[in-house]
Length: 315
Image (cartoon, rainbow, N blue to C red; front, top):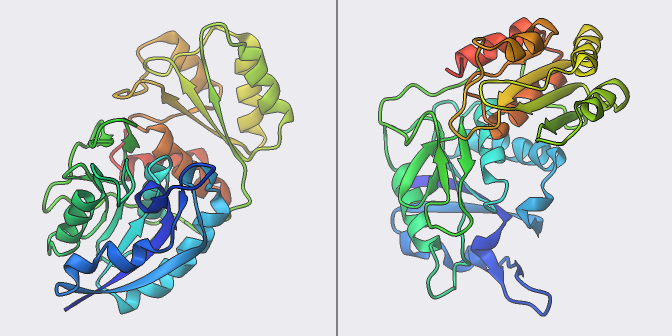
């Protein structure tokens, strides 16, 4: 019989009503996987305290990484119960930072609490258990809305629908698809590194981003630019990008578009690249956050960052 390690972090799936609204409930562990008790042995780790996933920090990732690294040798797979708000961020992080040794790691949650009359939680758990029993699954995936999504490239796409996640570039998980993972690069995780994200919008000042790059402490930065990696023609922004990258900072330029890809067809994107920004290709913000956290913590060069993007099939 399979042995499955369950990391219960919190989230809507286990929420219960309170005078202040929904709050996490540890009692989920007693009921949620009972229908599968004859299929697998489940060893639970209930985080203390259980948290709303909007409160997750890199320090939580560091703690969970240690727990999962210790659990993997003694178990056939990992199930992570997680709030949906940041589930895709954690899935991307685990896919890049945790060597599963070919064992399946499945993350799931729910749009509605397990005990709600119209909850999607039981169906998501059913999809998860089936995935953990699939001998062809050797990577990290998200189980949601009856589908499996590769962790790398995944994102939350809806707060209303049962199909709350998708993967714009890699679609659903397919059997015998080689896992996207990093190879030959240092991936020690340091939760203290500072990675800042900068969103361009019409009317926002590129000079504000330039000021942040020059004066706000950060080892790495992500620029969410327009279209194929375009930014306003701001000499101050370009000068700040150049100053940041020449002084040891890593800057990844990614598209805001849900199904986007940075390119070199337009002068505006080329100007950022010439200033030292690395084009993120198909990288989304969830993947970029995990990737840049590892890059900054291990002092990757721009060439190593490009190597990582290529290994993950993002270029």
